[in-house]
Length: 256
Ligand SMILES: Nc1ncnc2c1ncn2[C@@H]1O[C@H](COP(=O)(O)OP(=O)(O)OP(=O)(O)O)[C@@H](O)[C@H]1O
Image (cartoon, rainbow, N blue to C red; front, side, top):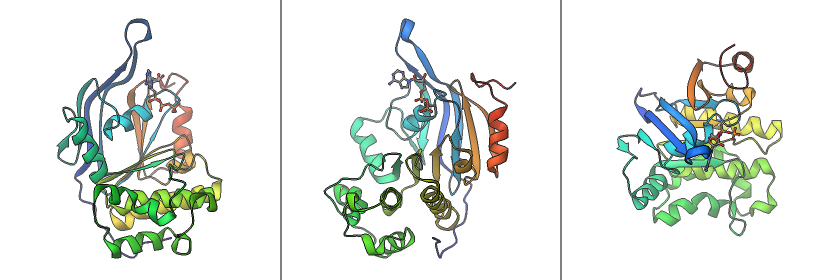
């Protein structure tokens, strides 16, 4: 799986959080899920978010993708500040500027692979850029299976459909939540290579939450969260350097 074109990194931020706080509940049930988080996801980069269970990875992703509200602070997609947007504006922003890939594929069972891929654009009333769509479909290696329904595809193929769906609308950023969590290691490696190629060769920006050091090693940078804070980051990671860094945190995320 590879893309023919070569993209250029711009150094601009595809998404940025500044002093982000997220508190759930009140009194005894109060949980500080994000504690003054500031992070930038540069355009054309593949970032992995790692950290112990409950460290705030999903919360960070959901707040930055406009799927959840923040308690205080700022978060932007491109030049657009999300805080203060109305629900309708948030829906539009997500639809037009963000691609999503989830652990559970989230395909509609009654639609074909191709219909699933173009669904977000169909809902938005946008016409697909056919040349682009052909390239995306070709790249994910689904050309012969576009008429199949999800139940007729393997898990890896279903996740490729989800990847193609995320890429088809040329979003500013793709958020992937444990995209290989339900896949065997070979299918997982294919999806991760695909995501990495979409960044390196198409200039796509990808942010991926993962528990897996091997998955994280496909990224350009790994950001480590613990107790709702960013505690470390690693550039040009390998599975070994990620594992080594993870071992330095105890269960509470403090460096030992
Ligand atoms: N809707 C919610 N209501 C109350 N507390 C929540 C809610 N969502 C998350 N939390 C709490 O916020 C904290 C961060 O949760 P989050 O799901 O972001 O962690 P995570 O790092 O993604 O965990 P995991 O790796 O287990 O998915 C946890 O203490 C969690 O219990």
